[in-house]
Image (cartoon, rainbow over all chains, first blue to last red; front, side, top):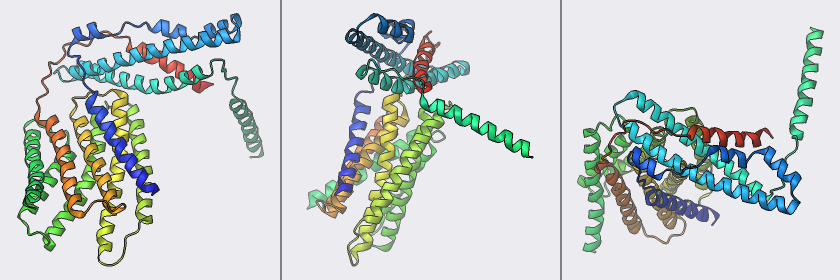
Length: 171
Length: 251
C-alpha cells in the first residue's frame, strides 16, 4: 500500500510539474526594447543596506525587542520582495541571452552564455537566500554566535599539528 | 468492439505519423547532431511500431520485437534526460553540481525501484513472468519519472527558456512516464485496469507525449537574433546575494 501511495504521488507530482512548466513558461521578451520597458528598477545597494549587519546591530541597540522584531520583519519582507523582482529580471535576461545565442557573433554568444550562467547561479543562490531570510523572518532576533564547531575545529587542528611535530621529532 | 479496435489502431498510428515528421524535421534542421539520443529513441520507437504493424500478433517474433524495442526505448529515454540537461545549462562549473543532484536523485530512485521490485508479489504459474515484466517496467518508469521530476523542478526553478527543444522533450517524457507509471500501478498492484485497457491508456499517454514533441519540433520558433546584450546589474545582484548566503555559511 505504501508503494502504491508513493508511486501515485510521484506520478501526480510529475504531471503537476509538467503542467506548470508548459502553462506558466511564456515569456514576452523579444528584444532590448522589451527589456527596457519591462525590467524592474531595483537598486542592489538598497538591498545590501537592508541586510547590512551593522544596521541590524544599530536597530537592535536603539529599539525595544518587540519594535526591533517588527522592523526587522518589515526589512526582511522588503528584501524578499526585491529578490522576487530581481528574479523576474534574471528570467527576462535568460530569455535575452537565449536570443543573443541564436545570432552569428561568437563573442556575443560567449557573453550570452556568461549572462545565462550568471542568471542561473543567481537563481541557485536565491534558493539559499530565501531560506535564510525566511528563517530570519520567523526568528528576527536570532543571531548566531561564533560557531562552537569552528572553535572545536581549531582546537583539533592545533592538536593535529602538535601530533605531527611529535612524529617528525621521533623520525 | 469494432469501435475499440479502431481507437486502438488510431492511437497506434497517430504517434507514428507525428514521430516520422519529428525525425524528418530533426534531419532537416541538423538537430540530429544536437540530440542524437532523442533522435535514436524516435527512430527505435518508429521502427519497432512499423515492424509490429506487419507482424502477426502473439507470434514469437512479435513478442521479441516488442520486448527488445521496449527495453531499448526505456534505456534511451533515460539517456535523453541527461542529454536534455546538457543542452539546458550552459557549460559552466555549476552544471556539474546540477548533474550531480540529478545523479543522486536517480540513484535514490533506483534503490527504491529495485526495492519495490524485490518486495513485489509476482503471483504463481505462467502469469509469473508476465507480472515480473510489468513490475520491471513499473520500476523503470518510476526511476524515469523521479529523474524527470528533478529535471523539471530545476527547469522551472531556474527559469530556463520555455521554447527550448529540450524543455519540450522533457515535458513529453514527463507526461508519458507519469501516466504510464500510474496505469502500471493500477494494473499491477491494484488490479483496477485490465490488460486491454492498459494498452489503450498507454497508447493515449504516448499520443499526448508525441503531440508535445511535435508541437516543439514542428513549430518554427521564429526568433530575431539580438544584436547586443543590454547593460545589467545582474552580476552585482548575484554577488550581493552570494555574499549574504556566504555570510550564513561562514557562521
